[in-house]
Image 1: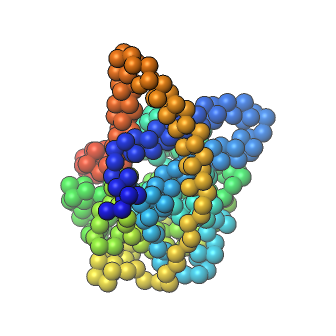
Image 2: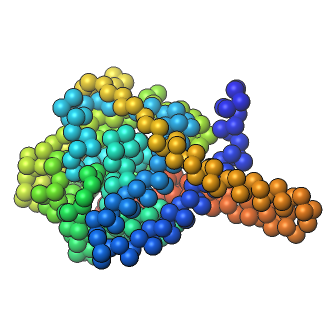
Image 3: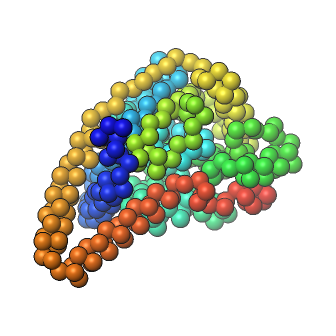
Length: 376
């Protein structure tokens, strides 16, 4: 094991990375709060500023994937589709099987220049998660309780507000509603059988309301739907904790582009289109498991240096005073100060671990275990 590889396994290094992320995030959130005064003056300028502030935070996580762990992401698509990346508003449909599926999506948005302006239909619980939810609030992320009767008006209003967004955005939809687990899959397929729908092997039954509403509200803004099917070589099941320990993974993403005009405007027909899409996604996963690759031409977009440079900037700004302060505490010889400093370190470590826990599948929501049994 080399020295760099050794460093990647050390808890103190993870704590320092977490410290930079958390403190820089709080600083960014405070700046975002201050930018609210811009909204009534120049809404579009407010949005552009917040896209760049969000980039400064999210790119630190992308840096961990690209530079720290060295994880590689390969696209399987066609040249015409790849040439549209970062040049249009789109809806992204991504399978929700892995703890870091969002991070693989983010690394692609970063490489094509739309990380800061990327959007998602997110569960409302995330709004109250420090850094993540707070940053998303200023980005006009659409939150939902995943109860359509309560969400309808909120979701429609949130989507319509994005109609004049000034920067190209990729709007992510997890149509399955929750991460894949065997229990949720079993219940989901019981629902599929009761509705006379074909069963899926690798996905949960998609929930159609969010998709059909997004397509309806964003017509005229969004040009296409990108269907993204993600898997990892070697049957790996990566985690954010594994990324933090420097484990390298190889992600493969099959991307298909569907012009929005090809998607039916009728809600029922659009829902059927989505069900058919997930049957195709299931077939793609079956092909991947058998052949070890997706169909299509392979592309490996180059990682850009900005994520690394951004992290080094924040690390320089924040770790220098931290080291000086820590040295002063231990040099003082005061047991009270030393214990207080160690207590702060312990609390910070706990906080970082809790943030990582948000992505863990076993700590995910119970949504899907019972909700699939209710009529959509």
